[in-house]
Image (cartoon, rainbow, N blue to C red; front, side, top):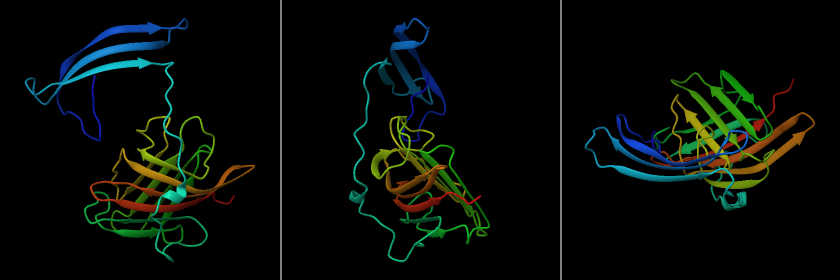
Length: 225
């Protein structure tokens, strides 16, 4: 057992858990579970965390519907990003734990190496490496499970694509070989285009707090050939 959140957890964990009820369907798959547990961090006599958990596979669970991307007020400054082609732009507050006040614009033309991939129509990844020290930037975004593509939408209070609730979208930028997953990031999908081959273009803006705020924008374009 392990309860953690907000990118924090126990280095040493002490406690117990009790399974009060567990139901399975005819195929042997878990359908219902009730659990109680106690968890103490670092030492056996630390103050306890008590948890009661009820999990029901068939219980309805839907996040709020996405909003209007126009409601996200932040945009890159006029002239800061190219009118066409792929790019990644971000600016940060001085106390941002990822980029410490830095502002960056990277494109395939300014990078020494770049990669633009999309493994399915509702997700994309972009990576840029530059000559600067630790100059590597990676952005990943994905729409909620159950959706089949990007559409103009605003997703709030989302987390890393690798740690998200499957019913929610996800976004994460790593920079300078450092990540900072957040549970209260924001993803605005401003534009998305598809053709017979799948995702052709998507434009997004995002907010990623990590101490101070990071504001970002990107355009992903499927490589030719």
